[in-house]
Length: 243
Image (cartoon, rainbow, N blue to C red; front, side, top):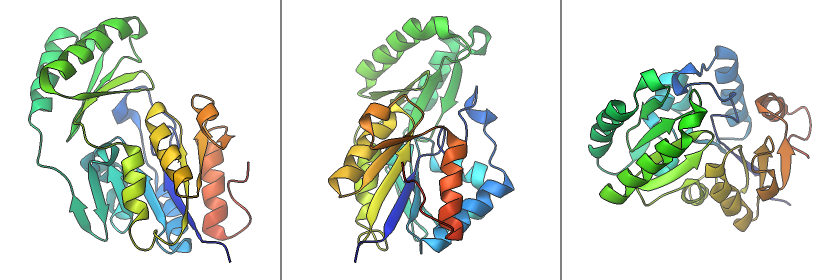
């Protein structure tokens, strides 16, 4: 008898389309209901793994995420069975946000996303500033012992010590995940370690869109295709995520 499925999902670009700015994402009631139903159908073996902070995710999802396992801040935060595990707050990012605002600021099109354990420097609205933003991120990282995580038109400064691959391994060591086979779905460079971790644990990974498709076992066209698979799981209506 094969092991049951554990579904591990990225958020931005996977469950919802990537927005022009981080605060442009909306989680509607239909999505909340669907994900909650899939989690129930999988007997709790569904987790959200995101680069956003737990505070950001809770603000978007409301109480829907409370019963679920959530890894936030690229794995630095983990909430399972109502208990949160995370390092001490990092004050450096508030300071770097102010310094970045003074250097770039919204007037130049750089969106500054302050997180609990990181700082996102989004240049989607000003793609010509990619070089200066990257150099600034490198300067900040070198000065403060931080890690740079490149994403979809963003450079994120974050604390060292965890990535989404670590999050997958931590979650799969917990009940009810530990006796299941992981399927990870994500769309961006930050998801590559998570796909590798899922594979190493006997599972597989799917890419959403073509950006990291060469690193995955298959590709889904867009978040709508992901939701179609989640819906199939939630309703038990067929084989989901067969690519």
